[in-house]
Length: 142
Length: 225
Image (tube, rainbow over all chains, first blue to last red):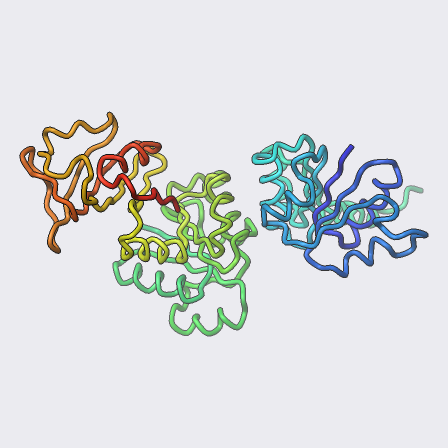
């Protein structure tokens, strides 16, 4: 599969690395060239030598998305630091570029739920953290 | 009318002032604390502090009863999402969004955020209006209604020069609505004769631009913004 990941912070870069090592074709788009180093960190070979692709560009710019290969993407992952950017580019990937599988990170649990109901595959780390805390707070079974 | 304005920069606060002056009820939402504190002195309870892309902030501002939501922050993603949520989740009748980067205009359109207003585009249109070497100027596009109003300068030797309006058989879906001549405009009568140098305003179905240009300005280049 061809996986396009927009936003290579801690989450995006880790997902990119694991997708590449599971044999997928992976392209990463990030506006910060430094994010490239995050992809190289802890690896024997550089990101490109391992077969990865990296584009420096802004997620909202159509040219950057096209350069990163959105036209042939099977999976689109929106994992930039901004919920609003993620929600907009995920909808572009879905509606304009008709990417089959679109996954979007939304920190805000309320909007993650609502956009989930509208047909976007949202992942809310905050929601998971809340659940984990709630579970941890429960009394230990005797 | 109750209007929620998101973004209390120059555009947002001036809009709020005008609307309040016309006796409308307005709530401004501003996410920068220093900016909020500055304009709170003038707008008092009519300005809220918060990030309007968060649902509870919109709800606190009373989005359920808003007649109009205007998103004019400096961030296009924020403007898109505020309007999308207002329209699709809270079923607000009217939204207006500001486009900061004209390259993002397509994104607004694709996600159904209309009208989307871009100062850059407006100025570009004015420039085209002032520069007659372009054959055709788009004055207004009513996208929902699938109609547009264009302006054309009638060139020398165009097939319509010297013809009466009643004798010009334009393509179906187009109509001359006004003629600008010698600095003033009038609505043409059936026996009005078109002259070279006239500026004619037409209403037409989108897609007829090129066919129409051939009638009035055969050498003109249709311009699309």
